[in-house]
Image 1 (spheres, rainbow over the protein chains, first blue to last red):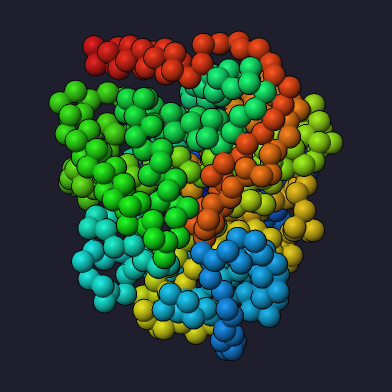
Image 2: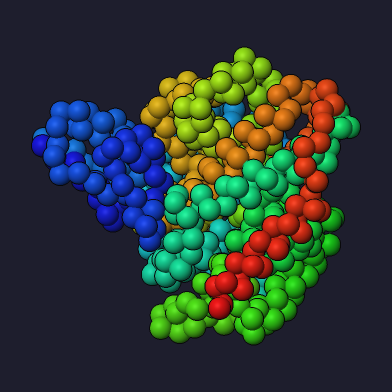
Amino acid sequence: MRVYVQEDVCQGHTQCFMAAPEVFGLREEDGHAFVKITEFTPEVIEAAKRAALTCPEQAIVVEP
Amino acid sequence: MTEKIVVDFDHHSKEYRERGMEIARETREKCPVAWSEHYGGYWFVTGLDEASAFQKRPDIFSSARELGNPDSVYKGITIPAVNTDYVGGFIEMDPPKQLEYRRVLNPLLSPAAVMKWDPLVREFTNACIDDLIERGRGDFVEEVTNIVPAVLTMAMIAMPLEDWVIFNEPAHASIYTPPDSPDYPRVAEMQAQMATRLFEYIGQFRTRPRPGMLKALIDAEINGEPLADVDIMGTLLLVIGGGFDTTTALTSNAWRWLAENPEEKTRLMADKELWNTATEEFVRFYAPAQGTARSVTQDCEVAGYAFSKGDRALVSFAMPSRDPKHFEDPDTIKLDRFPNRHAAFGLGNHRCIGSNLARMQFKGIMQESLARIPEYAIDYDGLQRYETIGTINGNRNMPMTFAPGTRQGPGLQATIEKWQAVLDAEAVAASA
C-alpha cells in the first residue's frame, strides 16, 4: 500500500497536515501538502485514510 | 440534462441575510444549481459537488474581469459586476497569471511563515482589551476585531501601522453597503481615495523599500515583466480587503456564538486540542466569504447542467459547506467536527491565500480575548450585522457588557508605537 497527494489537485488547505502531521508535510514555498514518509505501516494507512476524508479538494490517494 | 429551475433569490437581500441557509436547504435538494432572475440573471450554486466542479474549471468558469468593456463575457467575481478602471488583484484573474501572483505571496502566507506574526496578534488583542476593560463594556467589532487584523495587514504589507485607520472604514463599508444603497456613491469615492493613497505610498516605497508583501510585489516578475504600480495597487487592495474584513467577520460571529453557548465556551477554553477543529468549524458554519462569481466562457455541460457562454454564476462557499450529503447535522456547530471538508475558504486555484493567517489570527484574538473577558453578554439592542452579507457575513457592531477588569498594558496607541519601532529596526537591519 502507499499514500500520495495529487500535486495538481492539492491547493494548500493544510487540513491533512492538521489531521495527521506524522504522515503529511507542507512545502515551504506554498504550503501545499506532500507525504513525508516512505514506510506505510497499517497505522500510517489508517491516519492517511482519515486525513483524506477531510481534504476539501479530495487530493489524497490511498492505494491498496 | 437537468431542468433549469428558477428561484427568487438575491444574495444581497435582507431575506438572504435572515433566511439564507433555510433558502439553501429548501432549494438544494431539488436544484443544487438554480437560476435567479436578479441582476440580469445568474446561476446560483449551492451543492458541494457542484461548487467543486465549478471551481476546478477556471478555463470555462472564469474569475477575470475585462476592463472598459461592458459587453465583455468576463465580468469578474461579483454580481452585480464592479466597474473600476483597474483589476482588483489576482482574485479577478485566471491561471496562469493568477498563479504567478500567488507564487509571489505564498511564501509569506504559509503556516510556518504566518507564525512570525502570532505575537503581534496577541499583543494587539491585549492592547485593545486594555482600552476597554475598565469600562465593563465595549464594542467587540469596533474596538477589537476591526483593529487587530487591520494592524496586522499593515505590518505584513510594510505600511505604517497607524495607517490602519485610513483603510478601516472604506474596507468594511465597501463590503457591507448594498449596490443599490443611496450611500454607495460615497463608499465608491472612499474606495477611490484608498487607491490614491496606495499609489502615493508605492511611489515613496520604491525609494526606500523594506521587507514585506509590497517589496515582494515590487521585486516580482510576472510573465518576465516587473509589475506596474496599478497592478501592485490592485493587489494591495485585495490584500487589504481580504485581510481586514474576513477575520473580523469570523471572530465576531464566533464571539457571539460562544456568549450564547456558555458550556461550549467553557469546554473550548479548557481544551487546547479542540482549537484546530473548532476553528475549521467556525469557518465552515459562518463562511466569512459567502461566495464568489464566475463568468461562463463557452457553451458547456457541467454537473448535468447546460451553460451558455456569457452566463454568470454565483458559487456559494457558505451553502456547500452545509450540504447534508457531506456534513452530518450541517446546521449545528460541533467544535470537534471531523472530517470537515468545508468549502468556506473556496476550492480550486482561488483557495483563500490567507487561510493560514486567518487560522492563526482567529486563535490569537479569541484566546487572548477569552482569557481577559471570560464572561460577557452581547447587547442585542446595539448588535448590527452587515446590511448585505452577500459578500462577507460580517457584523458592523457588537456591543457587550462584562464585569470591569484591570489594565495590563499601555493600550493601542502605545502598542502601535512600540511595534512600529520594532518593525523599523528590522527594516534597517534588512537593508544593512
